[in-house]
Image 1 (tube, each protein chain N blue to C red):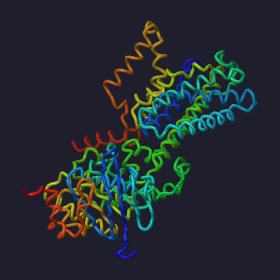
Image 2: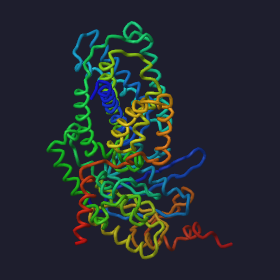
Image 3: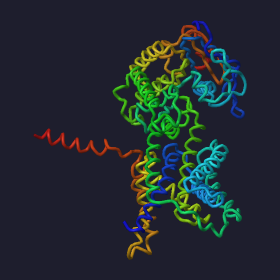
Image 4: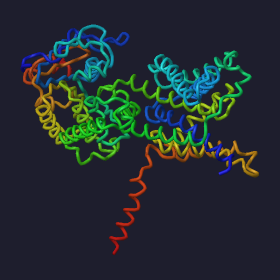
Length: 293
Length: 258
């Protein structure tokens, strides 16, 4: 693999950590957010500032990313999770913009609109790959536990969830903090991969891109989120080749619209890819052929 | 607790929605082990009473006492944890989940493992998950839905969806079960089956039941005591026999002969 595609793969892996977090919030708990690039932004600057000013190593910086993002997420959640549906979406949208503006105006620490150069390197493809695997394993277990199932119950029918004794606020907060932690981590990784930060890297378009990845993959499917994220990071790069260059963002848009029209529940719906799913069609096939004898 | 102890009592309960008084000064006392019926024409305030008991909205005035404890205006999930469960008039299932998962989620209150233990899938988490599975199976067998456990709940026929809701309600291990029109849309045979099922789970789980329904055969054969509501007021209360001979009740349902 040449360094260009290795770079694209690393980016895909970084975004995957963020979208897996948003998948828990949106796909499994049913809360939409249009501002999660804001949490990536917090994570990115937290780690960049910590490594630069305090001189801590890169992996400690990532812990700063997670903690900073979770703290902000907690206050945002405390103030907004009682809001219903659309209102929550609007406040997350506002949050994304607020974070960007605050960082733009903290010129002495963040460099403001000029950006922040010379961020410590550290993020490699290997690091991202290992973190991706750990995150996926933890989230799969989480979803198999009562905590994950309670989140799904809230997505399905909030009133019924309350009636069987689920503290809806607590689980919405749990899902929000998981998404904040993972977006923060992704932001930190991005900072140490790009070596340069600018508030506009985390604008609303970025938030939209993240949520599109989750919705395209299918709400309630980690497999879907994973496939959609990798596909949507690679797609614009693949479309760069040859004459497609000028039309690539157009083609990207058309493909997204096509999937939404043809498969409204997302690529994977709420199904997961597992070994059973791969093996069982073959078993059926072999039992059929044996039956034929 | 003996048979004659009060399990759930509503004291001068009142609920206003703007200028409309949906429930007006209702006094009801349900004894331990009783099946208590609430009937009345549409819009009489029956479901509102269930919504007040389960904390979906707070009452404007009055108190709700559940086995000697004041539970007025506390959050719904805590009322559920204390031991009051219900079904809904318009079925509210976790539609895209399997029947089994619908019930399993209702058993969750028994599992005490931490979120970290869940994410790492520790031994204690696995053990408790096995116990939950056993509980869920038991509830499914009680309503006779065990062989349907892997079906998607929202795709089953109406009658079976009602049973899933019932199983989910009893899986929370309640002391009091509120049934909101469980026989709605059922024919005579189905409601007979339902009567048997309610009796059976009442004995099996040691329940006190409050039931709202328009099917008089269901109400009259199940209930020890019945309250009749009209326009938010309690107009009569008594045994099924007393209610059937009560003039005010006949008037509310059939109108006055002029």
